[in-house]
Length: 109
Image 1: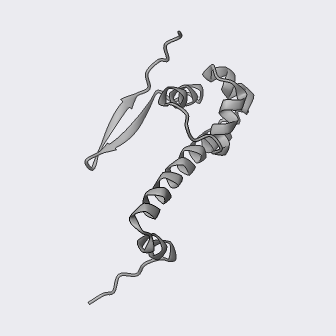
Image 2 (image 1 turned 180 degrees about the horizontal axis):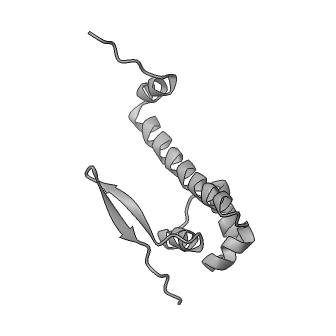
């Protein structure tokens, strides 16, 4: 019989109450979003100002998303940033399957 080895992080997560776990998951997802933007910007060596121009957003909004200090942006804003980075689609996991989604063109008001 082999004993399952758990990491310190796994032990920490398992010790959280349901409320704490929900908050942890939300904050982790926010971190992943800002890390995704940071990594893409670094890979393409694109500045905040250039990305903002390509995305049709203010540099303040892009910087806040990049740093993770802004947490209430819309999907449309996120899609604009992804388009500005040259992305045409994303993959979404649903019931254990990955589904490709095209990023819609933003509609000007």
